[in-house]
Image: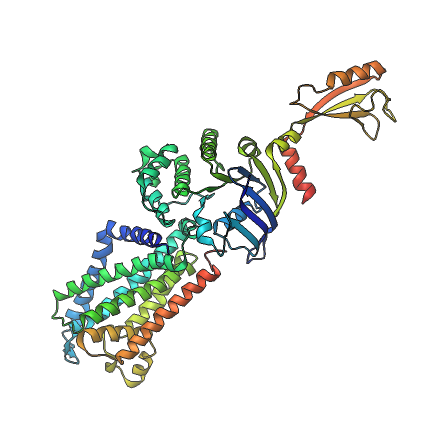
Length: 308
Length: 253
């Protein structure tokens, strides 16, 4: 898959001296959904804001569809739609007019038929003549998406699309995003809900303190998260595993009182039965058995702590 | 050039103006009528004429410039400040448009509103006084350039202002005094020599004087000086806006 956005060594230090991004390099593939995860203040919004032209970078280079975001800003921005984190709308405008306005800003000829398709896909068509202040919070968020899509962008940035949104609406957002992906739109979303990244993304990037700590295919990441650990507590401490138990993937704890075994809970055969059978066959007394799953949250926290 | 974007911003701003015709047009007209009552009828009867022009007529160009200044500043500064305040400025900043296009849309609309109001004030004045208009085409050109110039400075104010107090500060503390002391209601020839020299340091005097010249053919300062002042005023405003978009000051951190 070819890259639609190439980010090289991107950095940003605000005038106050706050470093927000410190040398981020990544390629975003055409047609993928990339989720950027990170705690508040990690630099996610700064990253998106630079790519969309809201913030000027202090260093590095970004190209969108081959166009430099500074020198070729017109061509670059035409490809991009931005759904900002905060709901900011002209409250006395109608839905239809505000979407037309956004389209006009991007220099596209008026096309009400296209806008109708966008509004219908977001279940806003019935509200087209309603004033924005009359809409519910969820509808306002969808209006922001409609505005971002008004010029038919190939790339859509969603900055915390489901922050402070109830479960139903979150599911609704996910459906919208999936439908857009099906149309070939490249989607970059920031979130601090791991569940959201798990549900939506093709790839997951983790940002903390302005650095990209990790960028991985979600399936690989899920494989890692899908691992469980079986801990076998031994009745008698051991100094070394008996030969029959060696080679099964067991790790003896330093104190010799327990042995742990990693396995993939999604796999057909976990190997647990064979393992416990071997313990019995060797006559090793087992006091207790426990299993634990490494959650996305654990891995996330570990990464943020270890790599920072 | 993204002409559609200019037109989109321009139409959006003008729509607001036409949507509230009463607030947009009636308010300036009412205040003009009040000036006529106070300055024209009450005081004007005691001042026979200024250099052969009846006092009532004499104050009209100054009144128009006063209103144009206030309206241009207010309209342009509100338009951009509100977007900053509400947050919809992000849409403008993320769009494929240059600063010239943004300025053309916002400032152009603010200037046109002022021109419309000026014409309405002129028509209103015709009900009260005999008003010659010696150079109508020049009057219109000066009016348009003055409106645009002040709208440009209003736009700058809107970007500069961090809160509502700051937004009100310059019009109240700087512009209104400059206009009142800029010969809107009197000829500087009526001042003692010292104050006449001081008055000539006031840039607004040059705008009022030049505009008044297009009506009556008389001016406090040479017409060329008025044109130069206007050009400087426009040029400085334009360079300032250009610099702001270049550096992103208070717009694009």
